[in-house]
Amino acid sequence: TFDEIFPDYILSKEKDADGAIQTISKDELKNKHLMLYYSAHWCPPCKKFTPVLSKAYTQLKAERPDDFELIFVSSDRDQTSFDEYWNEMTFCALPFDDRAAKNGLAKRFKVQGIPKLIILGPEPAGGGDRPLIND
Image: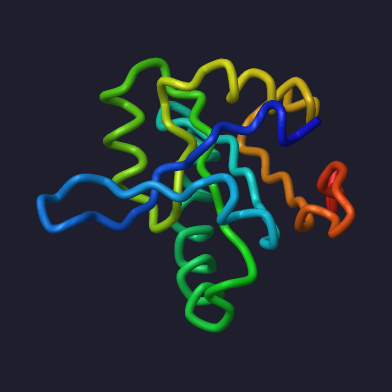
């Protein structure tokens, strides 16, 4: 299931008083729609689409702050590339070093190319897998 693959936390764009990146727990995301954005800094179509997506995210988040979260799922080749590219974004990210989650999610949603945006509904009230809104 999605819950078995998804990591215990994601990286937030918020920082604490010491400048450390804050995290958002998996439990905090249960009632939200999730958008998984598969991308990488080396991908020209991704580099073109990411600023458009960041702007749309910022506008929508201002209107609906509690309904959804957009999560960058990196196909970058190293931590430095991930850090530089994520710095251009306004939304959360799957930790780069959690390659098992990245690969498991890519397999689950049959991601074969990037950029790719997967949209999921909230976890059902009675439990079970999140509904896939697009494919």
